[in-house]
Every structure is written in structure tokens, then in C-alpha cells.
Image (cartoon, rainbow, N blue to C red):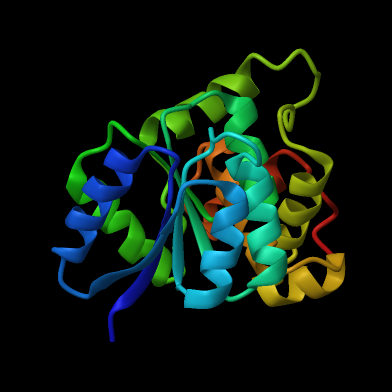
Length: 213
């Protein structure tokens, strides 16, 4: 079965190029596209995609707001950001809105294809430059303490990872969705420089994040 994808970008040439790229890839089908955040909400509702490839800078409703609205309206969708912006503020805002991955438009075509496939498998692709931006933002944060740069919610999630809870259990404990847990973990892993839950738990133990219970 093909991975159903909706494209959201205000530039027609970008949407056309992405449609040609993805439709020409085995196992991927573009089932809709939108030029604005408002339009994207309706297109996603009508086409029920697995993956929404989302630009951030658009007239009217931006990609962060559109991501939040789409996921509230169509909880089965997975949003993968594809944008030109790699500043920490936008990255964190997109992940906090529920996006599960963050790619940049200067990525190689194969990276975009791989990103779509990764999201469909439940993974959270993050462009290396975006990851470095998050790490740099953390290392230069004026706040004190080894966990500086992590938001209060990220610290809560990290403490529960240290305690051995799965994403579903963390979501239930904090009253949030599993998708939101995954988004927080994607951001947290990049900020603290780890690649999986085991490394994150060890990091949390070393830096005394949570009490491990």
C-alpha cells in the first residue's frame, strides 16, 4: 500500500516539483496539495493522508498554526516540516505544535523521500543543520544547570523516559497525545545530543532529571 502524502506550500513550482519527485518514488502517492494553511486543513480532512509535508512560511495561517489545527482535526496524520528556516525558535515551535520531523528545502531529493518513508514508519527525521541549531541554542542558553535549553515539558517527558515509561504511558501520564510525546522526544534528543531512548535515559540519570520513578 502506498504512503499517502499531502503537500502544503505557497509556491506552485515547489508543489509541482515535490509532486513529481514523490509520485515518481515507489510506494508513495501524492493525494492532495494546498497553497495555504487554511486550505491544507480541508485537503487533509478530505484526503486522509498518512504524511503531510508542511512549509512554515505562508500567507495567512503559517505552518505552525496549520500543523496544530490539522492534528486536532485529523489525528491520524503525521506532519513532516519542509522549510527554508533552520532557526531554533521555528524548529521548537513546529515540534511543539506536533510535527514529527523537520527537513530543510536544500536537502537532497533522496533525503526528502527517505524522510517521508521514515515518518510513515513512526520515525522522526531531523535535518542535521536543524539538530545542530538546537544543540547550539542549548549550549549558549543563559539559563543555568545541565538541562538548560530544555522546556519544562521536555524535562517532564525526559524524566518519564528515565523511569522506563513507553510513549503511550507518558502520553497518558501527562494528558497529551503520543504524537506530542514523540515530537518532544525528537527535540530533546537533538538538544542533548543523543540518538535513542537508552542514551536519553542515561543522560537524564547523569544530570539528575527526575527521580527515576
